View 1 (cartoon, chains in turn green, purple):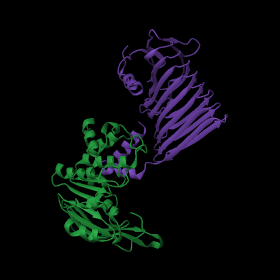
View 2: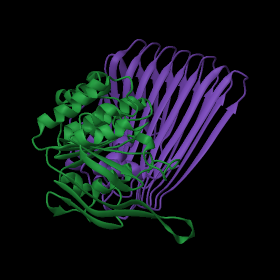
View 3: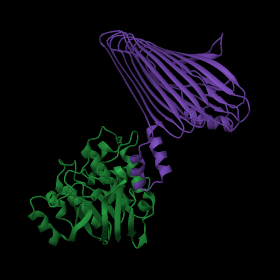
View 4: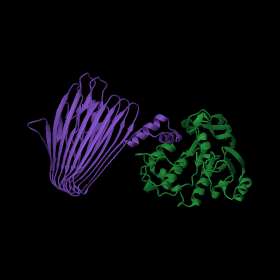
Length: 248
Length: 307
């Protein structure tokens, strides 16, 4: 189980003032649950995900994973403890190949056949990709699917996806949803956090957390929250005060 | 022919040899030829006036290889060696060179190899050259290779030059002249560490219509090392030339990239790219999210980059 206790995160701004991006967030992600975090752009969703992975360190508050305080642990230590993170914008590498990344991700010398399974699961013709470099020769959508394949190969107890649907428009949404459903079957009690604006992803959630202006605006079961989101003109418009800010 | 342990280790590093190679070879250790074999199509003879060998590859020779590794295991040894390759029409061969120096002593050890390649019409050569140094003596390990390639009509040459570890001082010079439709591809991989110094200079002259050159260097400069990459392409005809220098800089390393393009013909198309920078922070973080430590992540990134 993942628990955030009064987590805040601020960055220094001009004139010596701090800007708070995440404000006193408390959340529990139970084992085996698929939780979708949604809310307006610039509301602090991605920052919250990075705080859980350890890419950013909270200004105050605590993060507990399976009862252990991981607030001061490095990214590496958190990864080893069973947290994985799919980047919103996958990182490119000159020289490293898809197979290299899948091997690093799985933590073992994965056989080519096994690596291919993960690529096939995300809708890529594996043999065409296994030896490709993770560089600009791959399209945004291809990089995104390879990013998701790495998370599949890690099979950790908590997986975080930052806007997994972005850039994979051509890939049918059904497949992406099947991937998430499959993940829940493969690993018992595996928790999944997905940051998303997509109604169809919201629809497979057990719970939905709405973040706006750095705070938890509301949270609850899908049945409770989804109608309130769909009832408004747009998922993106319900929160004021943060319009026009960049995604952080 | 038997190799001692140091010879064997150096031969493994520079030529991936675990034993006497297949095909033609000439193995030189501490200024002596310790083994040589010619084949029906590839004839190796000693030069008479200077130290070195002539390698004659007969026209039409296909799928054969020549290994000419050099090892230095004695401290204080300095040598200049001239090797000339005459590659006949339509031959298609692999040439593996390379030099390994183990210096445990106080004197500098130095090997300056001058390699000249004369490729006749339609000949194809893949040339692999690895340089490696080891040993903990205060004497330097110095390698100053000169490579010259003269490509006749339609000839193609691919050079893979690798120097990853242990060479204190290197000044490499590569000169090539290409006739009609000849093609040169260079892939250089270089890593310097500690106080090492490496200069790599190219001058490629595209004389023939339809000739092309693609010179790409990837390098890593760590610790207090210095590198200079000086790539010049001259286009004297309708031709295509591309040079690229892509470098990772670490610690107190210093890198100087000097692009040089000279077009003497209106249809010469020449392009240079150079990029120097440290390892991107997001690359390190990404690999750390997969469970690697920062140091392991750095190693993976560099290994991939220099592959």
